[in-house]
Every structure is written in structure tokens, then in C-alpha cells.
Image (cartoon, rainbow, N blue to C red):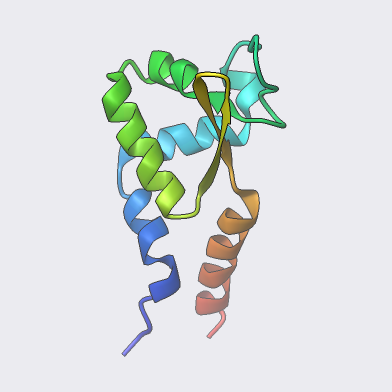
Length: 107
């Protein structure tokens, strides 16, 4: 029986939602999808949850739940600046996930 990559199950579950996949895509190239922010640098600090909410056209609580799931899965990191939370893609986590699939395909 194949090992279902239990270390990656939270990430795979998080990415099983189209909105979260879209958000991850935007966070991988934030300058292409979001305007400059007054507080926090898009690349260094991440994207303000308000901008993510605006872009997705979802409610703020829904976006917060999506971001919480992505963060718990280890796919994003968060940083609080003033009254806002900024999210940034964790590229190392995404690389590890991709490498596990590459390794599985080579067996």
C-alpha cells in the first residue's frame, strides 16, 4: 500500500479548496496581484488580509478562515502589523510538498 504522505495531509487538505489555491497563487507573486500597501511590504511582510478579502470578493470572516487553514497547514506565515494581519507564502513548505511528489513518481 502506498504511504499517503501523512506529513503533507494538512497541506493537501488546505489546497483542496479552489479559493485557497487561488490565494496561494496570488501570494506567490504578490506584486502582480495586489497594490502597494501603506503598512508592510508585499514581498517582505506579506499581503494584508484586507487586500486578500477585497480581491476574493468573499467576506472577511471567510477569508480569515481560509488563511487560518493555510497557516495551520504550514503553507503561509502570518505577521501582525498595527491592526492588520499580513500573510506570506511559505516557499520552503511548498518546495517540500512538490519534492515529495517528485520522489514518489521516481519510485
